[in-house]
Image (cartoon, rainbow, N blue to C red):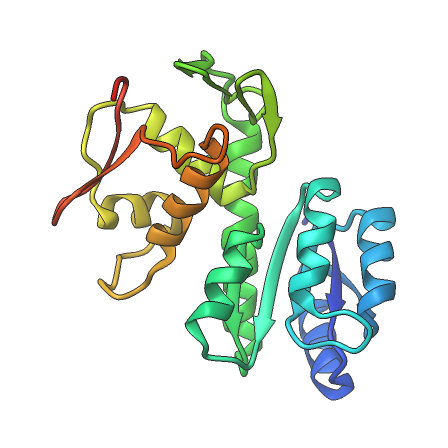
Length: 231
């Protein structure tokens, strides 16, 4: 069984050791860092397969760490928080976290989320290279998982890439939130989760030109979203 490296950034020592002990009985090699500022350097230098990142940390908070390392770290970032504030979740996803989970969380549930993320990443990395998708000034290269807008490279988190590839691969087709959720998460959409809406907002921002909201991704009221070839 393949062993994955995981850096757990958590200042609650008891919780950190509990997570470490459990995950290390599975397929993970877990290192712990309890200082936010030190964690940022370690993430960039060590490039673990997964970073499990607490929101509230001494030295530097999880949101700031994620924002600063995202352009130099292309593996998975999972944020953990005891906060139920919607805006914290929105912000975490907007700055490139691949998953956002609430504490307390049972270790076996955490493990299920980590495995699901790794499977998605593996499918994306192993997918046969397909033809580049171009619409206007937007070029998405699925083979290399790269996006350029106006010939300028744009960084995409895993879930952002998956959504854009899904929409651009079916231009003009309306995809419901349930269809998108199933494709990206592998589970049924509960009708309340804002995950898809947040991702769409992120993509519109990243595809924007000269600060203007991007118009290719259209909302079809009560139905879902589509990627338009023209607007």
